[in-house]
Each structure stands twice: as structure tokens, then as C-alpha cells.
Image 1 (cartoon, rainbow, N blue to C red):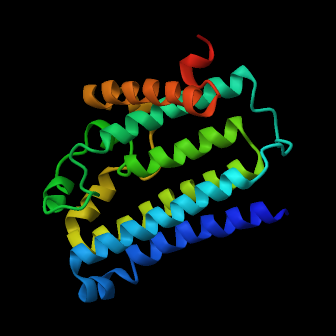
Image 2: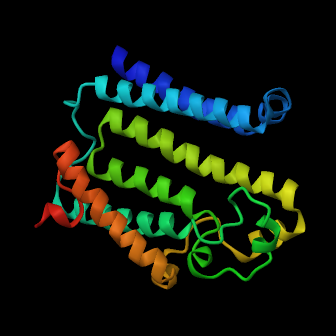
Image 3: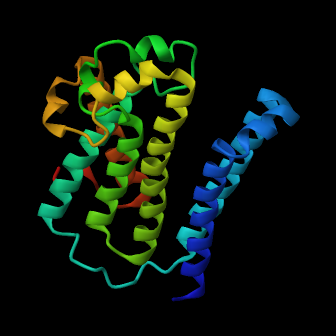
Length: 227
């Protein structure tokens, strides 16, 4: 293992570890000492610092490693593009009536019948990040991409599990009812019924992000790869 990859692993572990530590065991004592606003400022600063470190460490790792498989075939890019579209729809849909988000209406929202994106999964935002990670490993299975993607995917899915535990403590039976009626693992067959806003917004995000991917990174993605 080269030194640059070791630094990337260290940065990724810091990114994950500080998120979990500040979100759970350290949150209560830090809020008591700093206040809610001070804690949010500290959390944001640490998250940004570790994320920037991870990105710089990623860029420092040579990109010439041999891939585990050939991810540059059209089939791999087609599957990855479809995964990214699903991730985009999940992400946009997650901003509508999400009881997992912080807010005073969590219990009220959790008592409602799941519909739209929440018939697919109760953690659409977290799964959008996990699917993003999967898509990138699929087309670029080299060590630096695997480490970065694994960090983001692991943070998302472990964070979703911890979010379930936290909401159970805060919301109680309303959240237990929500868990019984909504799946953790996405039922992607239900994605076509995610709702008009989720699909329009998700498609727009997907088209814009994949266009920027070619412009900023130099690698055409999504439909732009074939246009």
C-alpha cells in the first residue's frame, strides 16, 4: 500500500468517525457546553475539514492503478447511469415530508401512511448516497475510488441505522409504526410511483450533474456519454 492511499484511508476514517462521534455520544455534552448554535458550528467545521482532507487525499493518490474489472464498457456505464438516476430521484424526494429529518413534526409525519418515495425506503437520502457510491465503484474500480466510495456509502447506511435508533428514542411508538410500514432496503420496483416532484427534480438533477461531470472532471457521464 502506498503512502498516498494510506493517507486517504486515514482521512476517510476521520470523516466517518467524527460524524458518528459528534452525532451521537458527543452531541449531548457538547450542546450543553456550547449551545445548539455553537454545536452546529463545530459540527459543520469538523465535517467540512475532514471532507476537504479526504478530497485532497483522494486527488493525491495516483489514478493509474489497474482496475479490478473493466468498468469502461457501455454496459457498466449504462447500469451506473440508471443507478444515478434512481439516486437522484431518491435524493429530491427525501426533502418532502421526511420524518427522519430534524424538526418538530417528526412524530406527526411518522404516523402518516407512507406514500411516494417513502413506499420505496424510509431513508431515501441515505440510500441516494449509497447508490452514488455503488455507481462510481462500478465504472471505476480502482483503490482510491473504492476507498472514497466505501467511506461515503458506509457513513450513509450506518448513519441510517443510527438514525432509526435515535428516532425511536425521540419519537417512540410513532417511529416504530413508521418502521413497520416502510422498508429499510429500497424496494426499487416502487420507484416509478415516487411522485411527480421527485421524478422531475431528480431527472433535472441527474441531467445537470452528469453534464457537469464531463465539464469539470473530463469524463462524460449519463446520457452525455452517448450524445
